[in-house]
Image 1 (cartoon, rainbow, N blue to C red):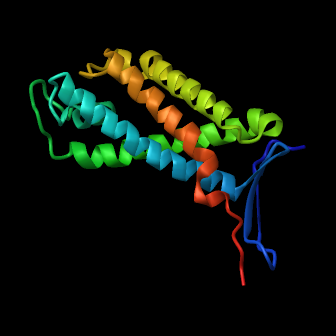
Image 2 (cartoon, rainbow, N blue to C red; image 1 turned 90 degrees about the vertical axis):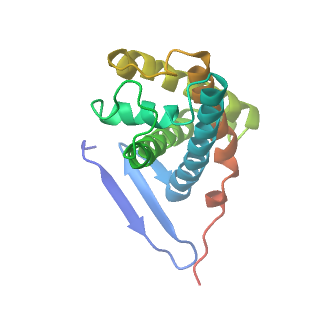
Length: 185
């Protein structure tokens, strides 16, 4: 088998299917769409948790926006500035895109390693999601945050927000409407 990526697109008469095949691994488009749907909801859940803890810790409502915008354009946010207008679109594009990518990684990982043996067992998806959130947080701590000075990054709330992202992703992924078979005609 070659190392190239193959995308198989077909439209049978009764079912609309778009598949992805890579190195013998096949993933149906409904799985990818379910991961995308769950990832967007998990992103919103994580944002809500971040705003809640930011307010609770006295960091201000704009702190999560500024922290994420600082990841994208470090020179944008000055020390002591509570609001930067460019932070909102940067966060919307940057963090949502990252959440989508992470949810697709979760989807591929779950379908590769867990679904063949346990299916969509909710306790397994919950634990898988929580672990995914933890390792996402750990990846942030090791790879991204050492070079930045984000206000919430070193708080337990930052870990909790990432675990809640993963738990939401894990719980909602098997329940997403994309898992329903699409019928044509």
